[in-house]
Image (cartoon, rainbow, N blue to C red; front, side, top):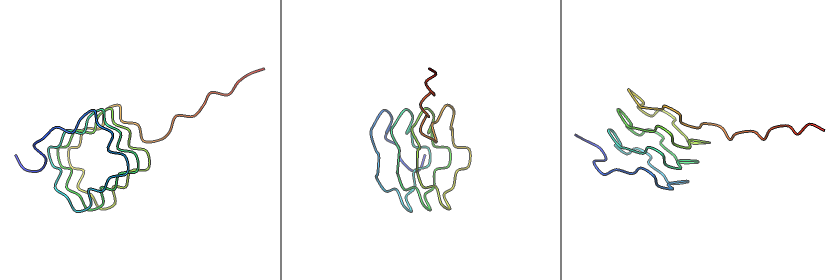
Length: 83
């Protein structure tokens, strides 16, 4: 197995840079990845399920077979209060 063999799940990684990194097979599940820069990164087979991906940058990243189940890409909007 190449890439990140360590599990990085359930962590706050907000704002970090993984530019040009090999994060294939990495387990980032249930992590805060908001504003993370994954530009040109290899994320093949990575697990990003249940992660917060708001404003994450995936420019030219390898996203082959990435798990994204229940990942949050946008901030939830507040419900409109009715009077």
